[in-house]
Length: 165
Image (cartoon, rainbow, N blue to C red; front, side, top):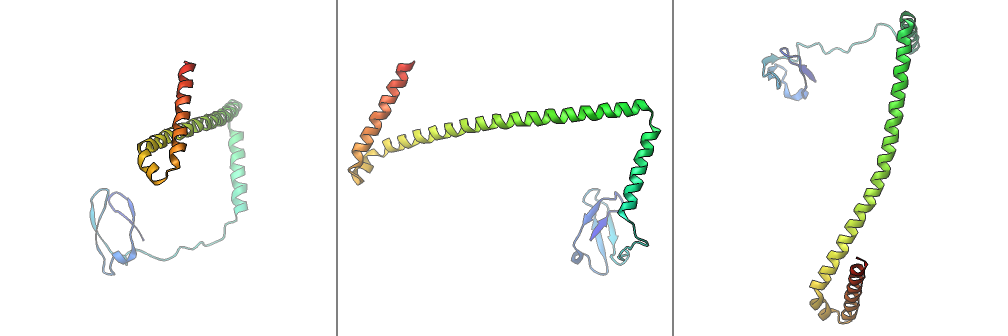
């Protein structure tokens, strides 16, 4: 049920089982006002419409109101309104263009981020292999040749990069 504070009109949703039939004191969480609430005092009847309302009637009335407003406005206001609408359309187009640019920039930065993560992970793997080289060779003796070739290849790549500078 929804209960309204009589002091500040703040509305609260409270479970029905928290308020007994005889009522209880409640305190507002916003203004700290305390009052006695009895659920029997409130009218819990369902409200019903006396007559039906058709949506077509409402739409026609809304259209008539809009036409009257346009007729009542002087031509200067109508022109200003049209100019404002065109400005809003241009602003929306600019926003769309900037969002597409940002999307392409994000794709490039995502690729760069993935590349950096890959390089860091590869370097961490090499350091881990170098650190655990001796225990790994004891468990897998044929791994010694593979690790030796890997470290020689990395040394050659390092020398190549140094020669480029």
